[in-house]
Length: 448
Image (cartoon, rainbow, N blue to C red; front, top):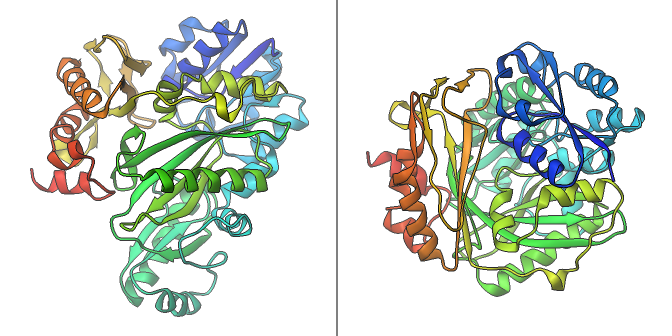
């Protein structure tokens, strides 16, 4: 097992990884930018190292700065968390060449899965259904028009790298397609350093369901159930739950098998998520693999009792999975909401600043993952998520009622948050009934 791990991230995920390391008896090194000098995880780490100014490009995205910190601190491994360098194949390669273990998938797996066009091709080879679209990236715009006409409008223009809704545009005709390609390329180039895009058929108001995977270096691949992530705003997940309320048992079983085949084909190792779109006929289509820990991993942890971060560390240390597929038991329903420092009544304008009061809810089956405390200053330089509220109850109805109570109990003063939006969601009849898709959040916002 590792002696010392550097956590190459910030915020709640850095704190989450740090706590897992402490429970495993592993020393931790926390890196931080000057904007994060008062972050909570720095208080708990065995060693802290400043890696640069507030700008991500000069701190959390700076491979030389992070590797210098790793060498100074004499660490055995680096955990990248999510976002930043977590799916950067070059970073994983640099770690490998420096004899420092990257706690995540192998370099080739990251490279193949990070390129969505390659991932789609691998899915086809594994016999996993994909959304109709181009075989690879689109180079010629006139050819793109011909392809789009063949697929049938509307089509989705998607960046082959990255995620989070960046580099994604919907086109309804030839002219909007050309504009979408240009816009998606520019956004993808700025966000990921890769302007490659591809086309796929746009599915009208599908559901978004993902399967959590754990795989070790011995060839064991396990599925840890699914999460329904259909509650989204502008392709950004807002609420996640497990199990999916509308996924029939036979479809769920087929989806698990498809995810398993894909990750076996990819020779995947460590934690990962296979994401699917599900149409109104319950046909599902592969869209991408997230080759890292997910923001919503606590949902799966609650229904399975498996600590995914600890498993990541054990797998990276070369240990085989200590349990098999038949050992995994799914219990009850878990739901997660993302608490962002944004103002829902002002088009979700970011709301950085000092948190004067922070009083999270509690009780049986309630979990709050956050790095925030009273007096903490939320910097304007990073993602606006400041916490995650998770509840776990025997039934979905109980989970909804518990979440409603927790949201009403949650007090945050000094900044705006998305708590009011979540209160509306959990009182909406469609969501409560489990009859929702990727368009419901926008419908709720439109009724203000």
